[in-house]
Length: 388
Image 1 (cartoon, rainbow, N blue to C red):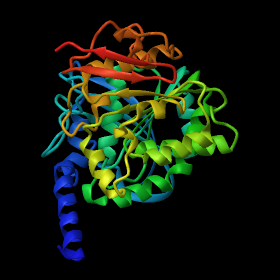
Image 2: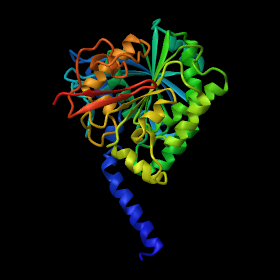
Image 3: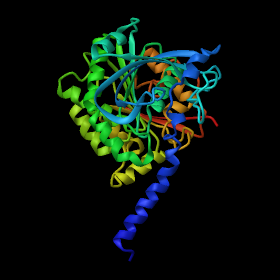
Image 4: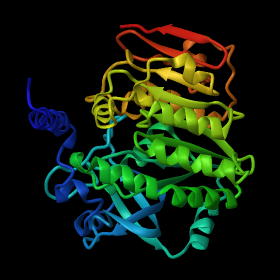
């Protein structure tokens, strides 16, 4: 029999082998840069689109102003208002990034204006500025630099056609594959800060506040919502709209406990999962081989908690299959219809353009996929065959 120390060593080597493909080149200065003096001086190319993003973050300031925020923790919230330019030839689902050198606004996502926001009160006023009816809060996941998170929310806003106030809540991920435990601790430490950010958004008095959380960011989100429930304000004064948990890196058991405390939401939460998610396969091993919510096998059990479960396993692939919600153009289109329309979920809708978690309300397009999407609601299960 193999000695215990040898088995442990082999297990660690196997985990490293799994993590290496996820690591990318996020530690490189170029891909962590959100702007540069040259990019800002170049001006906005014809056909580029500008988006205003409000930022609330528990990241510490980075000494490089072109990176802005690092992966280290800050004891309180930092705020900023950033204008991000999307290049003219942007492809839906992509976040065109520079890999070496300096970003070019004609080709890449790049911040063209950065304005510090001095306080929580100033952030609340910025959220209310422009009189937008809707707020979208995006909470990123594990192994995300600040640039990763900033450009992902910009891509979602751009590709969905969202017209309200976009808020990025960015917790202190180091953006490195081997810092999983650090990231998880950073996410846990950010719970109160996300609750505060949601309350500041509520004070701006929008019509509704939608939340999209991804990967480990779903853990932060569920903990903040649980805290709101304990404080007897689970719906942010009636303004909470859709809560979309994409590829949630949460123990399924923990999620069940969180939902038991929160109770069945008035509008069902959405869980977007994929059982071929390689990132969650690694997470499951690190978590003692307990199933993660984003790859859970029993959709009906989760749906009974007051959740709409959307199984994207057979809805095409996107690399490691951890960001299908944002990278599949048809899914992005349907997500945009949901965010723009704001309709309540109607379980009797069973056509593809309507039943796909009602993200596709009023959308006639269909997913380009290998097989199907399965939607499990608290009332029924829909299986939608998709064309080749």
